Length: 125
Image (cartoon, rainbow, N blue to C red; front, side, top):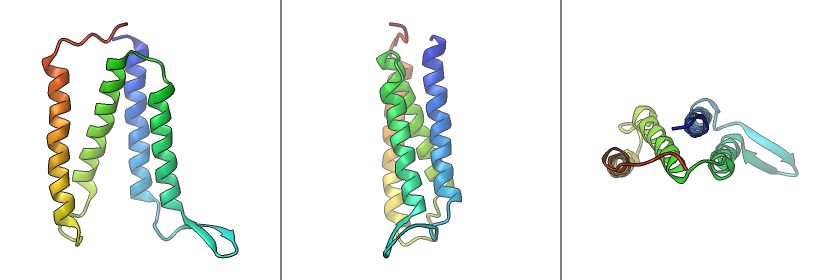
């Protein structure tokens, strides 16, 4: 794998970690007040902007298709692991549903990684 492909994967992981930190460290009570009674939750704005940055990182950073797929798989894995580590499954009313879909997401992540480990994939052009 060339340095350009490795840079895309590591950059995607770093951006994802920064996106997860928006969930953890921005208080939900903080708002952006535009005046006239129009307010927007700061956490929501940060999360949406973070998602857009991650999407456009993968869209416009030129690399082979397989590197992009591996980078998206790494992003999904970091997101899934952070959900498992940081979500309060026992203290939330929605803990059971989130737990169920987290297990299904883990199955999907496993299928994605099996694809990369089982095939002979070339990361070169």
